[in-house]
Amino acid sequence: MPRAMLYEDIKDILSLSSVRCMFVFVLDFVMSIHA
Image (cartoon, rainbow, N blue to C red; front, side, top):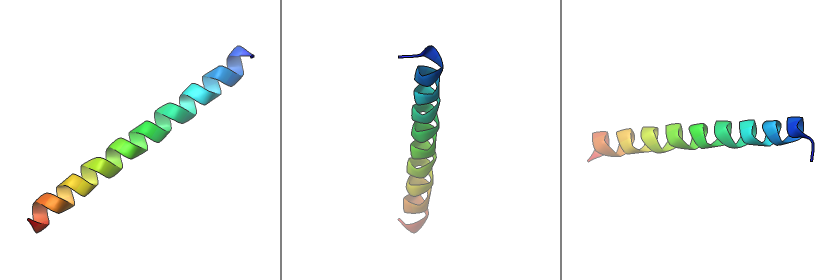
């Protein structure tokens, strides 16, 4: 497996996890407002 390809996979995983973190943060924020 070429290293560049592996790097692209890692970049995708990192961006996906940061999007997930933002989503969880926003959801938590909304829940605390409505509570």
